[in-house]
Length: 341
Image (cartoon, rainbow, N blue to C red; front, side):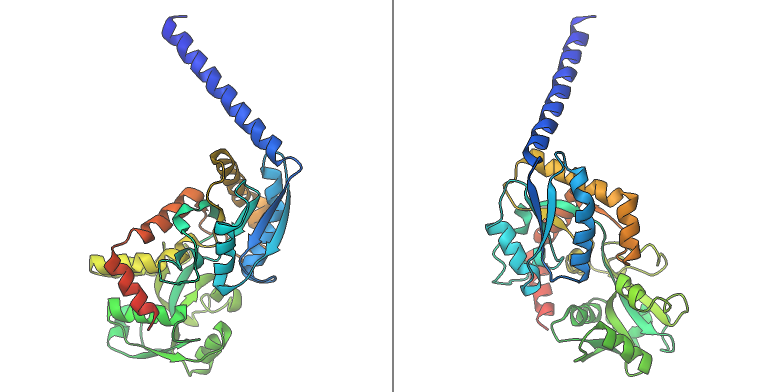
């Protein structure tokens, strides 16, 4: 064996030993510990049920197999939990945040109560993404989104500053559509009932997963026409329906569509606070990814209609958040204006 070969062998042996030592140290740290999963939502909802499903599987994938407990910390649309994770949670890898997807972007939108920097979190990944739809009732005489430039249609919304109203304003501004928003519906189901009763033509931002869960026959039986999608990528079940970011014309409109879609593109993200040792960040990223890939988790999530469709690694979530914060100030100012009606 020549000198170079011996050097390479020694290097590989050293790297292997370091890897084993690192894994051993992580296992030693977590053995006998309790890891808290902080859910930024009340018990019983989608975020909570998903976090509890993940938590049932997570401990077995973390070296040392710690005990996993779920704690609910609702408030201010997820901001309370984000503030806690950033400012108060232990930074040793024993606190994982199950975040609402709007919360990482609240500082970007100028929300004063959001006392954190989302770009400094250690993002672990997301089991799914969200896709919003411009959906109209089957008898509305439009066939594609371009038809709504020539014909005004009535769409339902819960409030002037809701996500539904925001998407109506974005679509009107970037595509020249004529969506007339009818405000005051208590919730999503009421808007869907309004479409059934004929008092509304459509819904400008219904999530695909929610539509399928609440009206499972609508798409299959052609009771609604899906004209457009908004999100990070096309929903796999709707490959022929265009995505907003694909059909806007100007670079400024493309940047606006991407920034507005960022919360849906990260889905239901999980994170560690800043300052957690990197080797533990990597170990927990590996562990949560293993859960997302496991057949047991996918089967459980599908049974609860949680649609673990397009998984995101921690790095991918981080990149989506970073891009949103790196957008030109004019794009952010425009989105803030649309958010505020």
